[in-house]
Structures are given as C-alpha cells and as structure tokens.
Image (cartoon, helix red, strand yellow):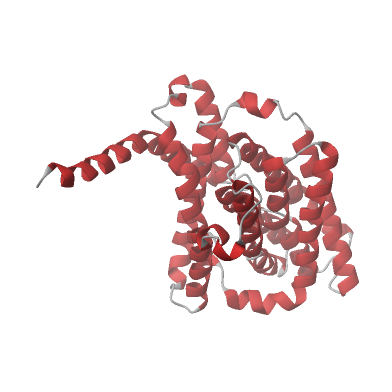
Length: 347
C-alpha cells in the first residue's frame, strides 16, 4: 500500500481521536444526568444534562481546553440531529390523523400565538436572534426537542440554547404544579384538560406529569395531542433553514437552485421516515420504550456538550429579559388554548 492510500486513513483516525475526549466527557455527564432525571422525572435528564455540563465546565477548568472542543461540537450537532431522528420512532402518523380534526384549530392557534408573540414581545423586550427564536419554538412546539431541532439549522450561540432550555424548564415545572388545580377549578373535563396540557405545556414529560395527575383519559389524550404537535416541527424547521440559508447568501439566492439539504435538512427527513416506519408497523411496539430512552439519552448528551462549552458570563449579559419573554409567552399560549377551546366547543 502506497503513502497516498495510507494518508486518508491516518487523517480520519486523527480526526476521530481529536473528537473522542470531548464526546466522552459529554456522554459521562449525560449518564449522570439520566440517573438524576429518574429521581426527578419532572426535571428530566436533558435539563440535568445542560445544567451538570455547565457546572462541570465551570468547576473543572481543564474541561474548557481546546482538546475537548471538537467532541463538544460533535455532541452539539450530529448527536443532536440523530436524537431527533430516533425520537421520530415514537410518533404514529395514524394517531395524528385521528386526533388532528378536533385539536388542529387549537394546536395551530397556540403555535401562531407562540411564534407571533416571540417575534413581537422579543422586539419590545430587546430579546433578539437565536434566543428569541428558540424560546418561541420551544414554547410553541415541544420544548427541548424543538430547541434541539431548531438549533441544528440556525446555529445559535451556546448561551442562547442554554437560556432557552432554562426558560422552558422553568415554566414546565410551573405548569405541572399549577395546571391540574386550575383545570379542576375551571371544571374542565379530562378530554379538554388533555387538549389544554398537550397544547400549552412544552416537554412531553411535563405533559405526562400534569395530564395523568388530572385523572380520567386526560393523560392518554394529552400525550397524543403533544405528539401531534411535535409534527409541526417539520414546516417550522424548513422555513428556518431557508431563512438561515438566505442570510448566509447575503439575501441573494434562487430557491430553485438552492441545495435541497439546506431547504429540508437530512435529519428532518430521517424524523419523518422514522415516524412513517412506526405508522406502518415496521417498528415493533416492544422497541418503543428502548428507542425513546435512546433518543432522550442522545438529546441529554447533546445538551451536556452544550453545557460543557458554555460560559456563564455570556448568559449574564442577557439579563432577565429572556426569562420574562418566556413567562409572557407561556401565559399567552395557555390562555389562547383555553380561548380557542371555548370557541371551537372543545372546552
């Protein structure tokens, strides 16, 4: 074998070796976060992942060195994208069709309120860029999963991702504590509460916690509504991908000649393909729990990598305004869901 043939193999091996330390650190943090998440399921492994990663990075200065950064980057992008594909295996398009008729007006209405509110309130509060977009999609679609998918196409700063995840987490906890008693106070049926929680609470784990605490069939209906809501990731991410590509091209590009992978990211096609396979029954039901666990662990690893590379000084510069934006959007979406249910006769 000549030197020319050997060189690419050595190059690939060297690139892999550079990525392993940081990726291994992210996996270790994710493993600890996953265990912590089992003790506090309302918080969940992904949130623990970014928090523990940030704390480890702050307390262990050596983890901020250049030797770790290539691995953190792998966790924050390819691993994150793979997590979205794996989580698609738990979404049955058949359930989407069955639930869609009754919940679609409420679902689309609350999504419009979240995205429109993020744009308007973000401008008023001076919260712009990646933080504004991530808090909007996280509130309007599905929390950490939406933030992960959106981050893969708009390439925000690590501090912006951390702020968005922290904001979504704060109001998830508030929703789990406040929604069930408020639902009983309003005299909501289990079905209407399931629709409310599925459209107004962000992460799936928090929807499960709130809706099953309410009782009746609120839990099962809330989960299906939540999974259906997840599917809106596809058009939103495609639009954001096009806008990001337009920015990169300086506002001058022809959509017809634009590379298809910039319009429809590969991981999004994988997500839809995984959901289609699940709908067709190709994925056995016995695989759902392990695949869901694997998908959640991959998201936790991605967020751990982001946390490890985070600088608290970057977050301090943003102040309290992102949290205020998240609070206003949370209240607006919750109120819009109730109002739309009243208008459509599903309350």
